[in-house]
Image 1 (cartoon, rainbow, N blue to C red):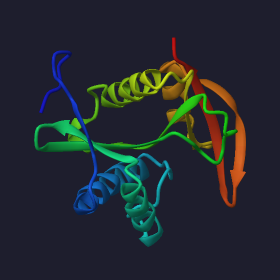
Image 2: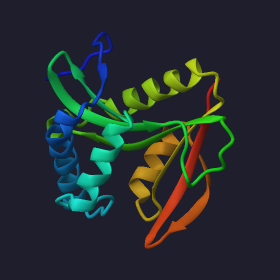
Image 3: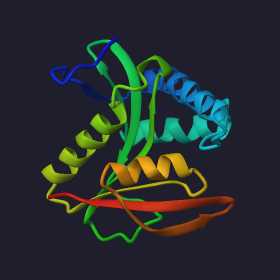
Image 4: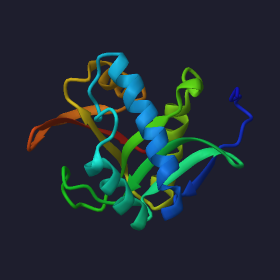
Length: 168
């Protein structure tokens, strides 16, 4: 499927019955990243990740992305994040993943744009996210998308690079 500027993407809150689809998309993305030598997520996703995504779906934080019934991406979006101060100034993006055949069509950028608009509609000032600090490629991508580096945080064995973008 080819995405054009006129394509209207649909962001739908995932339901519990969507967990297999969410995990399938996440597993595909994790495998693609692993092939590139990037350990962003476990490949295949382990039981912890499945439980984590199931809980996020229950909290209505996970969205499937696609066109009508063709779902080819996911994003987790929240209004709070333990890595950041609870300042009510931001929306938070996590776990962006798209199917391999959809790469190269700026879907990540479109998902980030959707998150910025969602954040702006709530009157919040920043869109924030984190990624594996050692994932230089993803860090450059976020910087190219207008995000600025805000520091790092250690969460057990995970070193996260923190980024934010001011919403104009």
